Length: 175
Image (cartoon, rainbow, N blue to C red; front, side, top):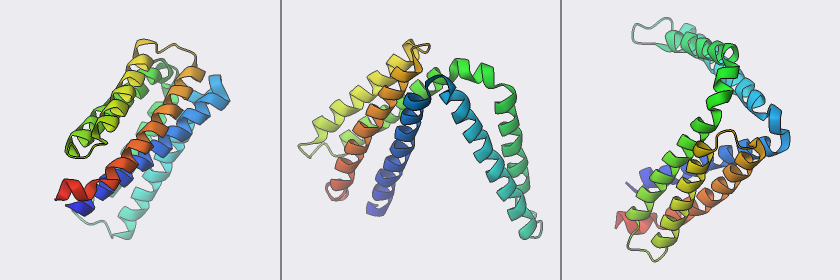
């Protein structure tokens, strides 16, 4: 149980670091940031798809191995992203906002798991701030990308802080 909770905390930190990088990219590149991120995502999907196809052929076409199908699907999704880039740009803020809200809800769940610790209210407060940041991005999706980048960067720093407090309190959750 303890290992599962620690992995959950470390995974949350990894996601927050990725969110921080995305926020910094939005701040630095401003108008070209969304296209850049979508191209990076597409390239990553293509590489993962190629890897899955190679893995399928290395496993000698096992009947239970769906790696080839996954690989083809990943490449097709990457192509879809590139073809529909303008449409995706229009909903990018909503997607980011929803993911931040989801993260905030998960952080609230984490706060209630360590309710016995005196820091749980701080974690709950940070989680509420995270949800509010996500709502801001959804309500104002056409806000300057710079502001979205700043909000995402601040969210990720708060979230990393909260995840570190959660990891510190895993022993209290298990006991």
